[in-house]
Length: 263
Image 1 (tube, one colour):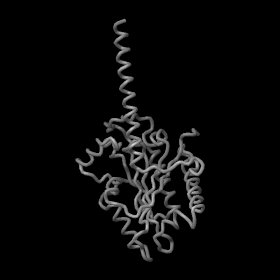
Image 2 (cartoon, rainbow, N blue to C red):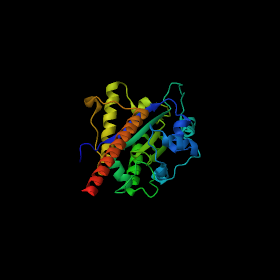
Image 3 (spheres, rainbow, N blue to C red):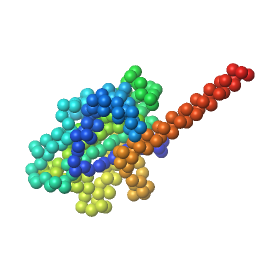
Image 4 (cartoon, one colour):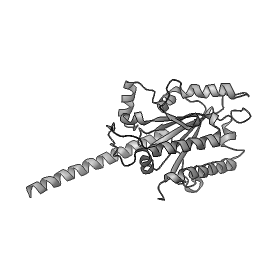
């Protein structure tokens, strides 16, 4: 397996899950807002592929994204119905996890050998069964690790530069407490790091058949998680660089063709 085809699992604990973030996950936008976001260089949405986004629901069922209820409301309903103890105002109400991996491999799973235009207009592109199988396996992984009743949202985005899945977990323990620390952390930093290493290793067992391998331990590499905004900004910069390179090569090719014609 290629060394650079790594899996990705980014975990963020959140004290509140805004409606704006829910709308982004569900693409619950009107035409004007979607157009503004699509044309904003710090994002990388492709509206012609938004129709390919999908939801994984209870039992691993695949279907279109349900926009009738916000993820924010689903979180609050789970807390209201299932938390038996007191909920502190400082408690993390949810844990947001992004699953993905090497761009080339994720695109192969999602689109196979189809050509994806970076400038949109991909209305003729269809998703492939590989991304469906991957999504169901990652959903099953979440259910095993965190409990299916705690997975309030699992959405797969195929309309961005790199296909990925968003899982939203409400960290409710078996005894009815809301505790992200108990579910994802530990009594101290060493225990928390050990849990995270083990979680990444178990995920790698799932991802192996999809051509993705475990990433390097951040305690060795010193890597730090990037915010979504930073990641998008870097992707936008990369897109602009690639576009400039394409433009220069087109100019060079045009000049060579003119020279050939005159020869």
